[in-house]
Length: 187
Image 1 (cartoon, rainbow, N blue to C red):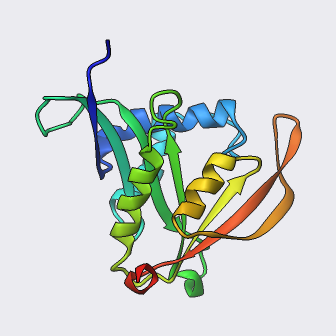
Image 2: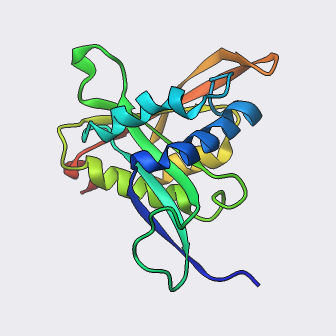
Image 3: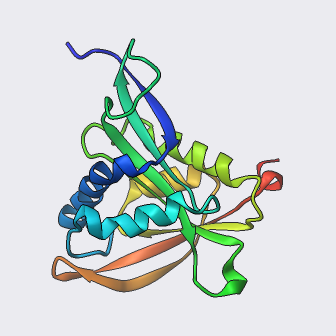
């Protein structure tokens, strides 16, 4: 019998680097969800992690599991179940009020448990009071679960880039979704 677990969503920390790298590398190796084609070492992912830790505007949130009854200090005791980030949409200054968001859940233990929903709830709450206007998400196709998640959060499909990425010997489409941000978008 498995013990009950609870999930905490918290800001990412440097100590999460190995688990975050392992999680992302699964998607690099096994899926077309990311268009990276080579796995990363933790040191190669460190600049990505630090960029989120040093920029309140582009947060990294993680979901972590702990057995019921454990202390509120999760530290290294709970398994990483997923993460969500907001990052720059494009590098030019006029895009500064737009972000690209993404969420990754740990296969088997994090998928289908509402982890993506918990992470996005926390992420959009963190973004709500910032001077941001739009969030964008690119979803490699097919990915019905991700499309449903984004639709639940008020994203709408705005277009599809056809055969824009090549991975595993074939071409993949990417559907683009957008959502209005800010407190007025929640009203």
